[in-house]
Length: 375
Image: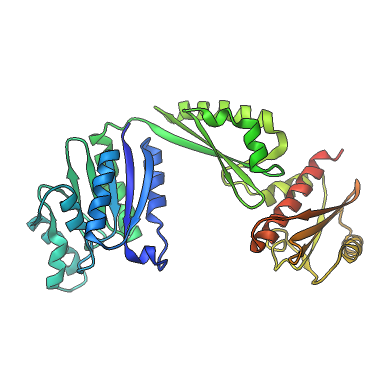
């Protein structure tokens, strides 16, 4: 199977003026086609640096995809950079110019002189029509490589990728495999502890298994490459079953599942209604649990009293409370259920701004597990 690299081009990305969404989108398309993506790069609008990056990518990967730098202005350097990397010259292409004229005429205008730049491409390149924008695209082929240059405008790039580039890659590289991914979500166990339990699975070559830690949640990614979706699903299912047998209820969901839903569903399965109170949380818990009361500057005793009163007044079965102490980077949690009352004090070593999210996720996992334990 071929490998690929993606090069996004634009100084505005390096300056943080815009967010690069193209790389993520292209990566997912390549993944679905079974193409291995080993490297992504962002380069500013400099012809020499872009050309050097393309040359290096061509040595490592069969497929090199660039996005951006195909506009009509002098700081749109991709055409020249690709030509240099391929050891070629730019040539004016009448067919590309006709595309530019046709597109601009739809708006009742005539193309300006600088827009003629968009009709230039490296000599011998395959011209790719852009029916949704003014910048034609092109592919430079060698015996080994395909350097594919796409617009930086996301909706243009996405359209051309699906309409023209995917069929081209399938034919050129005989792509007959897919990569399918399933993500298991875990809570209540840290990344290091999970790694200790499944480290041997992380050494597999197909499917592959990888970990990604978030604030209070750890994801386990299982990626399988196969000839068809059914085979990929079976490969993933075998590994998933093994992981679940080792981690038990640490796994709370898959793919789009959310921890808050797992917690509330577990409580609902016990027939528990729920009231919640947060303090000094800036609405973090309230955004997860409806009708959460926000009471500032509580201590543990006053939180406990407030939860008891709210539970009695609302006649609910369970009550969950969380207080954040930013000065000490800690939190207090209270959970009242038909099984009794419990408190939990936790300290946090990460960035202070992440403390509320971390505390909420731990509190939700606590609620989930207590509901699952209840008789």
